[in-house]
Image (cartoon, rainbow, N blue to C red):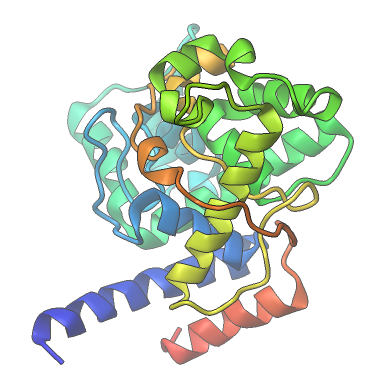
Length: 286
């Protein structure tokens, strides 16, 4: 085996170990976190989007990252970072010192920190969505919130519950204009809310399997497991009504080409996924 291959395998092993630790620490499903990282960055901690500020293993844009570090950094040894972040009256997050801001944003490229913050973000979104929707949620629901923001996800999922055949573009015209391949089929017909949701769910599940070396993992999809969607949010602001950074089409355009897949498990770890996370840690010396 070439040295480059060994280095790559070692880096991937560390990323998987960090994701497993984040799962064990927060209780968020391992296969969900693994699939999301595969879809977002192909498990590359230093991945950067060409069209937005998105960076790192989970492709957090600047504002989303500052928000989650402000809220959860202190729980994971990042009290200095949390304390340095303030929120303005306009809802945006700021760091007074430029060097400190850069250091906080660079944490997105540390796979251990990124995995923990992604897990905390998923847990927050899960609580918010379940409270609003009155049902359990899973991977696709969570991924929708990751990209559209919680408000945008509530709007999308609420509308889908009452009319899954409704055109998604009619509900999110700005998002559709920026992400035609997501909202429209190759023949130009508009995709429905239900169709987009199902396609995203299949993609996230496939991502988890690829990241696990082709092994079948307990599903991380469905309403009770929502599987994941893509960068619907490129328009964080336009689609969800938020004023934060836009997520560009970074994840979106490379995401949608999958066949529809079975949906199944969920966010809350099953005995199988919990065992998998701990076995992963053990095998990697964690």
